[in-house]
Amino acid sequence: MRLQCAKQLRGDLGGLQKLKVQDLMSENVVTTKEETTIEDAVKLLFRKHADSLVIIDDEGKCKGIFTERDILRSVAKSVPLNTHLKEVMSKNVLTVRKKDSFAKAKGLMVSHSIRHLPVVDEKGYLVGMLTIRKILDELVGMPIFRS
Image (cartoon, rainbow, N blue to C red; front, top):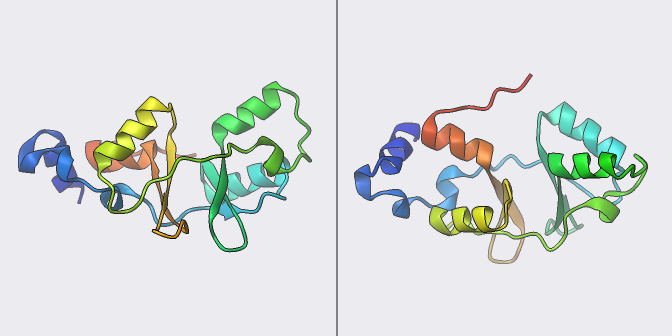
């Protein structure tokens, strides 16, 4: 997969236009509920070696996202660690579908300055995540090392 993606990045095989979100997304998404506290969310992120949590409802639909940026914002604003994510998560989350083009996803990520883009199915159920880390790893062969 990486070689094919790298060739597309360089212009071989018709360029990036052929890439779909499903070619670059991760299906292993860390999720939680909006009642989770900031402290518990940070511990979950640490335990799972993740950099974002998708907040889902009881049906599995995306309600929000909580990322490393949200942690920094919360700490900078002295938000108590026992605050529920529903108070600090990013709401009205932009999403894409598996069959959407990579160009569309990239456009959303660039224009909205986001590094995490949940992937949903036709009914709005979470099925994956497209991240800058995954894109760098797949397209450039530049994995982000985690300690």
